[in-house]
Image 1 (cartoon, each protein chain N blue to C red):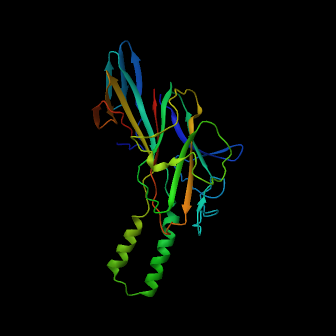
Image 2 (cartoon, chains in turn blue, orange):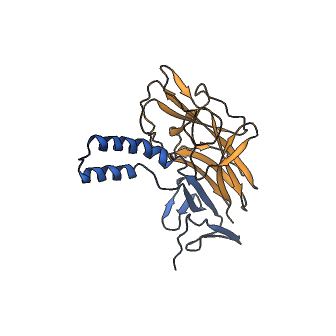
Image 3 (cartoon, chains in turn red, orange):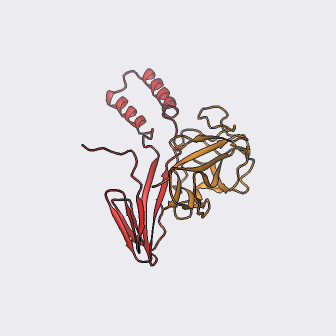
Amino acid sequence: MTVELKHPVPFEIIEGDNVRVASNGQLRLTVMGDGKVFRRRAITGIQTKPAAEMLIPQLNALATELLAQPDMPAQDAVARLLALAGLVPIAEPKRVEWVVGELNGVRVYTDGVNVVVTTEDLKP
Amino acid sequence: MAATVTILEKNGAGPTTTDKTGGTIRLKKADNSTVDLNNPLVKPPSGSDWSFEKWLRLNFAGSYTQATNGKFYTDGSSGLGTGINLWAKASASYSTPAQASSSSGYANAFTYTSGAALSLGAGPVTGTGEKFDHVVLVGEVTNLASGGLTPSETLTFAWDEI
């Protein structure tokens, strides 16, 4: 059975003698020596409009057009409806869970799937 | 363990806090968190119409060791259209939201990007409750605005945590 989680799992970090380990259950990042490991987390996409507010004016406009043009071709009417669906963002606010390992100014960023090695300060 | 973090909107002198992590923030000419069509910004014949300030802050719950580098940024691209502006600033202490009358003290929110974010404090912060600085947002509608649909905008709160 596969359980799909709504949000990515935050990494857990443990520290031992000269070693730091981060894991989200699927990926383990180990930094040895005088380095550090930390989570880089974010919540993004918090500004969305309620669906009704987006749709009602557009539906009203389409209804007016349909009344004025009752013989509108079916494919045109369906295309208009599909276009309306595209106006409504269905993506929920996204939680970003990265873990960063840093050693001698070089950072390894990973979200559990992608790995980036850089000296830059990347943000989600 | 990682902290459980939410985004709060704060209103009134109290203040009253509302979890907006998964919700909509409505810039309007009233100090409340309700998402409705009351108290809208209206295109003025001249000058600008200003919203009340929106005070947002990260709230930490659960257990974690410390958090650092609180940041706020946008996608860097305003889809609000000509004559509609979103202004942002950081503030350590809360004050009752008031209706703005200028952008003095603020910067264009869309100048804050992942590469040049608005700092909410370096920290470290520990413990539960509201942490890092507030983000204060203000909306402006000028007489140059055109009507119609405006798209949603992507706003991001980010922080480091151990």
